[in-house]
Image: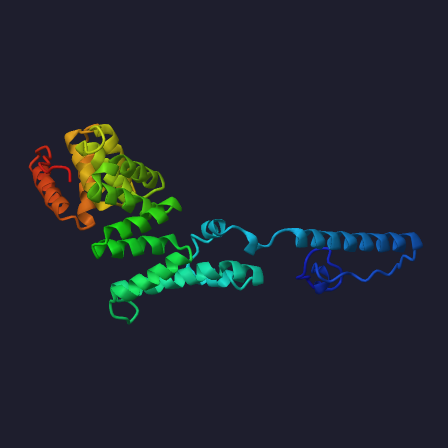
Length: 303
């Protein structure tokens, strides 16, 4: 007996079991009521679809969204993804044009600043590209423009661009603005801490480390070792090498954290593996003392 290799109950032919092939219906139903019902359903579906399309036309298109909303939507886009999104339709292309141009200027600014992509370093061209990107709403370009102004000694211009980026919610701009106030304008120390705190909550590990230093050293803020250690640990968990080193010192000395030589060695090794020179020395010293069954002793001060 011949064995079938097609699905069960699929008829006498193997292809009739596929969902896109209908079996022939020998009994044709010529019921006028059925045809009338089918005709009615088709007309109602077409009318409903036309109604939906009409209602969609009344809704505002993508390009009518506020610029800051668009910037937040595409803030996580890479340049290729942004270019692909611009091909969806005319509304998307028109809405994303300034953001797309801003990202291109940011890319070229970094090339001129660091001498990448076959171009020679040129701070003037880099600044020009960053300013063009900033004019199109790129907060990252604002931060980079502020950095160049700061390096050129034009601190007021640098702080102005940091502030623009910070007010638009850029964590790097908030962090740089806070650090700039601490260095250049101590009279704005309270505002500096406010910006550092906003950047820290937003996830900036550099801001978390700077905030921890303020708590630890009692600069601007009253000294609070528990708060300092908490922010050191948070920045260390985020991958900030200096925070790893200081977290290890806090665990070793019991300042702000429950003393734990095991965790002190753990964070010291992580900092050493990342290239921190003092951590490498301390980690080697700790391994030497452990081999002779001495308690690890870290004599360095928190940076």
